[in-house]
Length: 291
Image 1 (tube, one colour):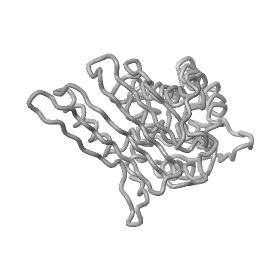
Image 2 (cartoon, rainbow, N blue to C red):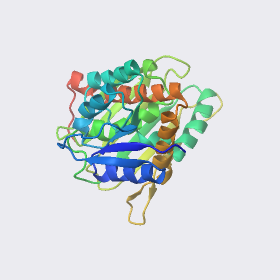
Image 3 (cartoon, rainbow, N blue to C red):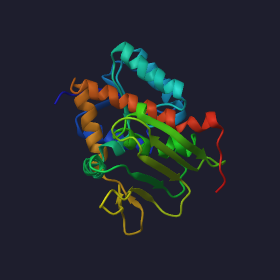
Image 4 (cartoon, helix red, strand yellow):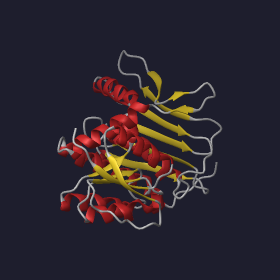
């Protein structure tokens, strides 16, 4: 495998995780930059951006303008315009932009998606609920919960149903920005009629990452439902991170960097921008709800 030199922006929880996994793949970090420090070394093969979400756009733009590939934590940006600008800039400069939406590489989800879509092709519709709850934490509080957590589940939904086929039925965020709910509907394409509810909470009493599927009655077939957990849990009920998700993500990024699957990489970057568009659509609506 080719050896790479990289720069890390942000050495907190996620920065340390990304650094450890890339170093295990032979990547050498020639500079580690905390937020507010200047970037001194641009002679690198790629940049890893794991700084607070509100800084992602500026850092990503800095490197993409210099035609340096970027691996950036989710969310890609904090506005729809900025997110799409970064995707367009990467295309225009012919440089890779990769957003670390690790749930898309979760083997549990990949197995779920395979079987769910196979079932859906033989039925007349489905109702999904994505539920993601975390106990209170001091991390990622520079953005609301929609950009912090809901983008994960939006990214999963968009790997099954194209953004162009989706309509936002509702999206609301609590006044303190720690709880949100949304409903999307697939309004065109072969799976038209599928509904999905999204519920996120980062001040919950417990950790939870579930997808629940409900199939309506279909002819002689009765209605049915089931729930899949995207996570494993410790005996104390806390999330036990599935290392395959992050490992798969990093290995795939390095394959893209080596020139493989270019079209897939472009679609994944657009997926990340579309997730931001969905997550901030409540701002245009002015929707708020009390819990």
